Image (spheres, rainbow, N blue to C red):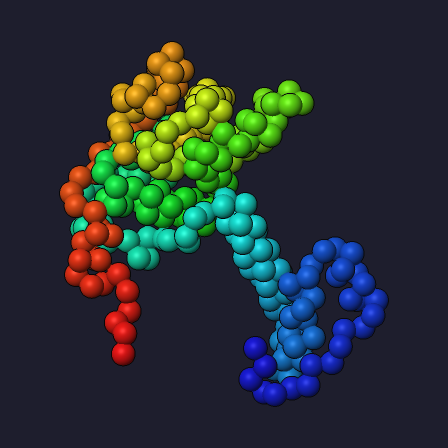
Length: 259
């Protein structure tokens, strides 16, 4: 920001103290250079104020985005930048509609089910990353994570409070249901989250099984109650085709060639 190579003097101590008191770290960091440039280029005072405010707004937005992204606990960091919509078996109009995120703002759910390797987790993570970028809060879980949550809070009877904290997120994602046997705690955790979120928050799940088959994974009564609430306001996408990972592996695209 200093094209004239002007010397950026330190801010006066009282001004720096005021900016600290007002919690303006981003504007404060830029201020010495900006003041030097403004003096050299004879900016109007209002231009200086505007530039400092803009820098603080930009810095706060970036900081809040990083905080939301870290809190979400995404597994890999995949976004739509690497997503090939034409390679997905999810219909293009459905992809486009889900990417508007309006379903999250309406408190609706999303179920993506199908064979392993057909892009379920990738699609959900990319949606979650987009939601975070648009200012929404996301919480990412595996089913076993919910089981651990229940066990950790059952001893002091604080499970309801723990579930309430989970639902501070606008979107709760539960990934890879159906890959492993579902323990009692995990089944209870899924039910509690889905029940508490019903018509209040959005739940998105990926599963090898359609939810209609969840009674193969957990007690029938619990499965019925969970699926009833999950599917009442849900978009269901069924993926198909061969595993993308296996296809890439067989084509030698899963690794960098040795030299």
